[in-house]
Length: 107
Image (cartoon, rainbow, N blue to C red; front, side, top):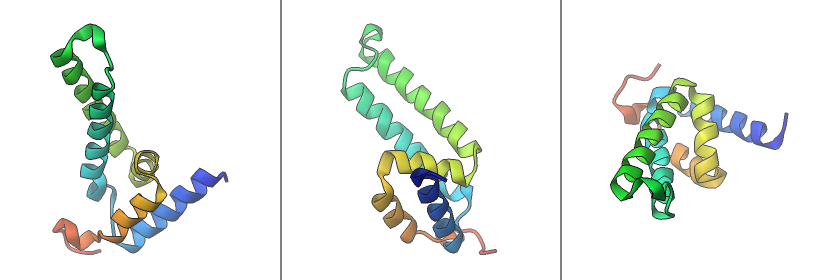
């Protein structure tokens, strides 16, 4: 198992300890995907489309990506978030969350 897989496995254990499920991370995934889209737009991505069309395309693509990631389960979500946030920041986010924070009943 490589270092990244080991890190993701540890994050999955932490999420399970916090009683988090994949649905609890959906918004974080959307936020991260749209932050990346905003960064790409600000860096001048898709200049041939013009500003408005480039913005729309990048954020439409972010929605599609986030949906795919969210449909991949908690392991895929954590791997995606790890790539954008880094391990320390993601652990801090997970440490601050519990399944009860989502308004649902604990298992």
